[in-house]
Image 1 (spheres, rainbow, N blue to C red):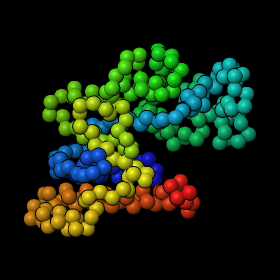
Image 2 (cartoon, rainbow, N blue to C red; image 1 turned 120 degrees about the vertical axis):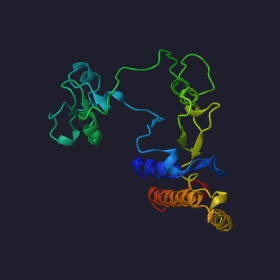
Image 3 (spheres, one colour; image 1 turned 180 degrees about the horizontal axis):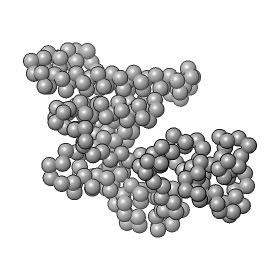
Image 4 (cartoon, rainbow, N blue to C red; image 1 turned 135 degrees about the horizontal axis):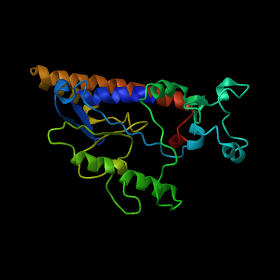
Length: 250
């Protein structure tokens, strides 16, 4: 499933008013229209674990040292490759975007996208894992078991409707803290059966909410969103494995 599709499905699920609590149940929040308006601000943080080569994502193609240091992996300046798909896409006359990231160009041109070069932590531990923790805690050099995104939620103005959702198997450090965060698993964990998936329990909820139009609408929207999400996750898992046995079956 493409990330955009996953975010759409997740937004549908949380907007419906039923939100996942861990991997064991659901909680009703508010009717969809009251909980999230069309103009409600949203903050989406995508943390890419692993590695990102900043100099090949946003290429300093006017710097000779870049090409001297990278004779085999440097991205060619705009229009200077025999294959156009291998040349950087000019951003401002000095920096260029990796050609594989061409879909980001409209956002750059409309000034909805910015790049921050040469940024990082002042704590040079050379530990990949400690660097991740520093970025998620927001307190480099100081041990902290809470994440900056969770702490931010506590300082939002009173009455601000917040619905925090983490997409992943485990709650990351950035969301760890005293504020409540729903966790929406993906992959194999994403389609793990929940109590709400049992036919007898679904029938019971159908009957329970049948006489309450507002609750019934919220419940049915959430059920539909979950069915779509599970179907797409199952399809993704099958496509990714190409029919090969899983590691558990090896």
